[in-house]
Image (tube, rainbow, N blue to C red; front, side, top):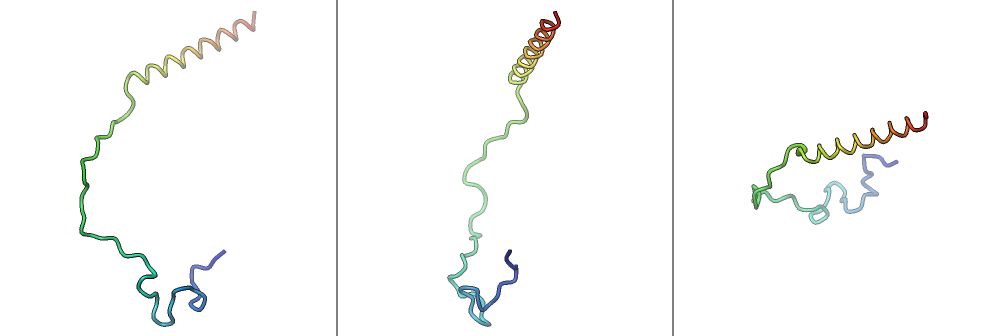
Length: 75
């Protein structure tokens, strides 16, 4: 496990009493650009009626099949 406090004598690129030299850290993010380059597509909300109907149909068919198997095993 590493300590969050770096030991200055063992940290690469760290100069005593001067900190990190320029070039050792990445440049800051530029703030000259703002906004988006193109309009984002509108998000669709929820499921449509057709996929829900198909899912309910599959569930109903599985339920009917399981009930038919249970009745056939009882006889």
